[in-house]
Length: 327
Image (cartoon, rainbow, N blue to C red; front, top):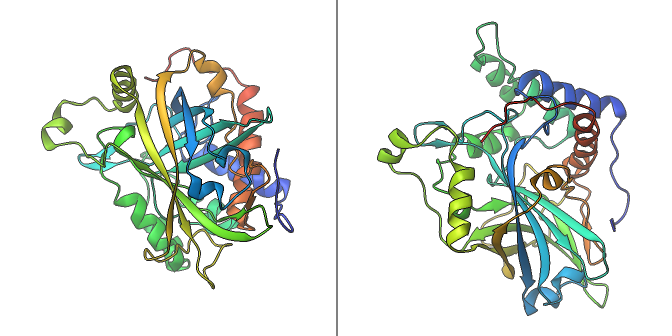
């Protein structure tokens, strides 16, 4: 059940189509796959909220009872054949998506990348920055084109730095993931508090060593997390960052100061491989699909993601995947 507060930003079919075409033309997408986060792996697990979270929201999955989850870990690059690290010790954008089974019988979904800032604050900016990454005749990106975009969109710099500065991680299980967008918690008295969330790995953060870089294949993260979960669960803590008065909730490019209050809201335990990977690949992890007690903010990119995800699902469902599969 989706529940939103106030007017929900909507974008035109033309904007959604131009975003899809920008990804299809410039990020290496492959028919039959998601337009973003195309290579992933599904697991089962549980999420258990803390009493502190239950005091802040009436949302079903935050009342302290363990709820079943489907978790998809993924590489965000457009092509399912892309490597898991850019070059050497530089990492790639990854994702953690969660489908919570609600006690009422429905589901809630969230999706978070491993970057702490995003370079586009509107649908048009997303289309612009994706188009600026188009490659030339030799298959190489044109740095001047991207710099030209940045010159007119200085607020994109923190997000681009976050992407460029990603280290090559040892494992999905040693990677933090950030919800990026603002939401509102609603408690039993109707009080609303704005927050952003992140998933913090209980194993700690760890990057690959220089000797690992020489030995690891281009795609290694899915094999690693499968082997790791066979030995022991992978665990993340859910942390809410609470807004202070005046903190923007409608602009994903403007993150809040690090000194804001935080609340440990729950624990996600991933303990076994999902038995039906095709089923997981068919799921849509819409970040606006939340139950009463959590309300999406009016951040336009948050709502644009919902529309783009739906269109991506429609398109890939009508396409045949290549015979050869990525890792």
